[in-house]
Image 1 (tube, one colour):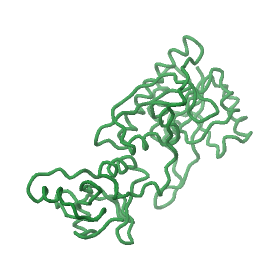
Image 2 (cartoon, rainbow, N blue to C red):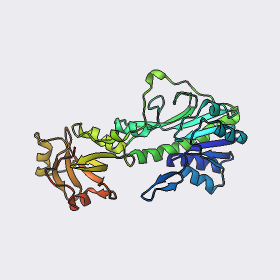
Image 3 (tube, rainbow, N blue to C red):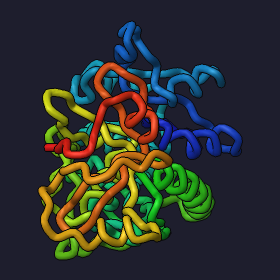
Length: 321
């Protein structure tokens, strides 16, 4: 089958790699335009574009999907299927109607839960214990199409968006290969309708959503940190400095000093109660202390909680706000 593949970040790589190695014909790749990145603000190609160019696959990078010139540029490729994985833009009706068989989306949640742009982030932020990946037949409305295949996975206590995304991207690629075998045999996409009454949403993340609220319980704080790590990153304020918190863990230790700290009832949320020289600063949440084990001060590279202490960035009695 002739396939146009639309994707942008690393999540979209495993499925594209499997397609390239398969008997299917990837006739073109659609990805986001090159964007400035890094301190030098040099234009950076998306991971999907880099892989496509490596295999000499034509690459299309429209700024806007809805403009007629792009639809006409895509039409000569005469795709049987368009497959989408974390492309980053909604496909308009003109493109959805272009392929002979239809359009498939590899979505990183168990639909109808977590429809939207950031399903992995929100599943972790909300403390979910399971998530998954769904192959869906695309339609005009956001993530509402028929479910073609799905598979669930557990979210582990030390998982973040990077680790969960890696697992789901590989599962999504496996499901896609299974689905394409069925499509070749039947010539159509057969799925089941979603139950819209069970739908939840995962909107695009905004910067202000990364601000840590230390008055929440420690589990809520940890879930927000993990759900925003490594990008866009949870953050907190220490004086005039904005500190990105990339990794943290609850304080579980033995000894009277730690027991007293856990039992301490009078404290201010966000206060630094102790400096653990082998781990990092201990910060109070509503119902327990948290150790910051990987942080990033402004203008610096990410550093361990130990280096954060040794660098003189924080002391007992400081307060994160």
